[in-house]
Image 1 (cartoon, rainbow, N blue to C red):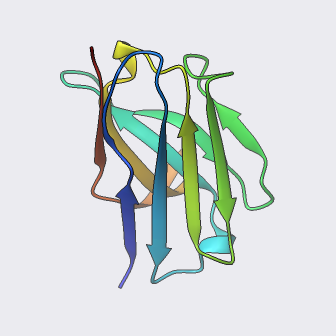
Image 2 (image 1 turned 90 degrees about the vertical axis):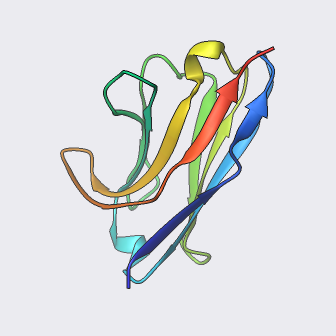
Length: 116
């Protein structure tokens, strides 16, 4: 049974930081490109960051220099370190396995709210 379980979301003030985690099971984690997507209320779901099987990362322009994605294949876990958070980063964040053009497995999402 495939599972992607996100954690680490919550409420943070503008300028603050959060670290999201995603624990994977039920598939060969190391063989998949992994992604973080996010969806704000009333908006489309968009890719925020991607990490390939060899650790190459790519970020949406809106989060470059603020977010850092990493993975630990031995722990079957990936992370998203989010710094200098802005109100516009408020969204549900999803852990996704597969290439951005062909996402295969989705987590249930974790809410991130940036507000004073």
